[in-house]
Image (cartoon, rainbow, N blue to C red; front, side):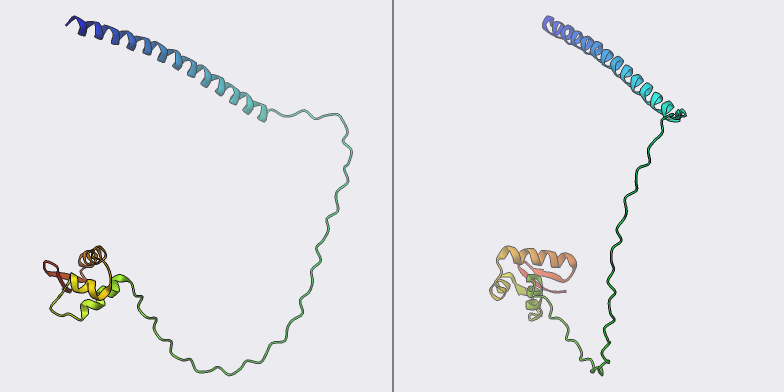
Length: 155
């Protein structure tokens, strides 16, 4: 019990010392703030005060001549007569990119009753982790549904 009382006294002394240091620092900070505010006020009053005109004569400095850039006139090129326009050929649609997800979904179209992960692995050439990630993502998006454990079909 006595040790606890001694510890509390030591802590209270340290707190008092810290509070004194804090008071000193805050006083110094206040002085600095006042000094900075005084300098700003002096600078502001110096700007607003009218300046005295000097009695000295200033010599005229010759102005530098500016050089104009020469512009070259472009001659107009004769336009070629317009050729007859050929009939536009229909543009073929770009092939669907063969991402692993698209590869799995196209494989699943073949199986109406569902397909297992092992079948997808054999036919797509992807590993188990890739296939499980693709199936999870597609099921979240609602593209496929899980029939039973390891068997999936298109939604």
